[in-house]
Length: 354
Image (cartoon, rainbow, N blue to C red; front, side, top):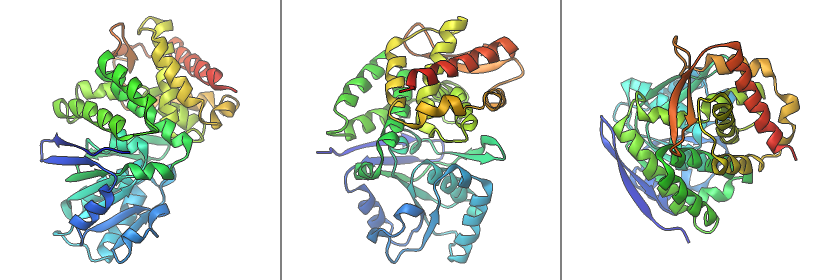
């Protein structure tokens, strides 16, 4: 049976509470009876939303765009939203991304709350206030920081998810715990063993661990950058497979690739427990079995080089270190390093072929 947990996150603009509870969505809706809703299209017909002013979002990468934000802004106006109104977003990461930026831009900002419906959003993105919007072929090129006023994590939504979505969410929880250090990673591994029986404890552990990064580095200029672990490789892999591999599974493969790249080039350390767990999660996705044959290596390399975290001094990567956590390293922007990145991704895909 799921337990009830809560925590408070401090941001520069305000504090906000996060409740992990089986009745979280109902409590949130009851507390804001006049709020407008931005909801994943799959859930729009739910009885809980009947009679509410509701806007829907198709939750896929093709709709994580500025055009989608523009559509929502217009629909909010047509729905009569004013400066005193509040928004509630219900959905996974795509809904959160477009709703965050929409809430921030509409009439210079409306307060908003969030009810995540995917494990990935529950363990990671629901706190921190980031929006990440795609532009053209560039993933997450546009974004901002605009924290919610409250978050309601309802683990009952996990029953609506396929196994691959659970694995993807666990990959993000793995990333957060590993970035914080060996003690948090060990705790995560123990909680993951009992996740099916009670997911609430692992969700709380992941959010409580991420809170540390947010509160000491709200705007991604220092330690919070560590949470990009797996993302430079993973985002490029998503692009190079035309998003057939989901974000969470891409991060699992990206962590493995980062570990391989670091250990083989000497810029990082090897960690068999991390890489083994990451590959076990990736193997849940049947798409991975054929991803190697579908991988556009030139598209991977282009996306890898275009990552917004790189600088004029070289390629900025988050790699495992000898202490059992991660470190940011800068490697030369050379053909040899790009080839090593491609080889690391090939190794990751080779490990998941059934």
